[in-house]
Length: 69
Image 1 (tube, rainbow, N blue to C red):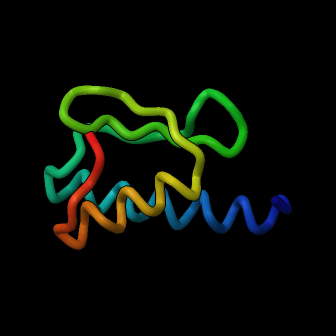
Image 2: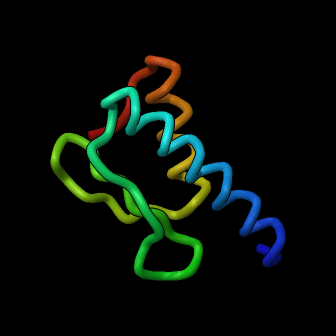
């Protein structure tokens, strides 16, 4: 993944996570430990996932769809 594409995806994931946090759907979020990874705290459990998966998870969560625990 190119740097600009990765930065754009990271920014999109961050905005989605911020929305989910303010709606009390997640209890935390932030950059993951490794490049191309994001951390989402869902139901008290931190998850470190690739950016693409984080985006999909957050979109489903915000749309009221089913998400994997």
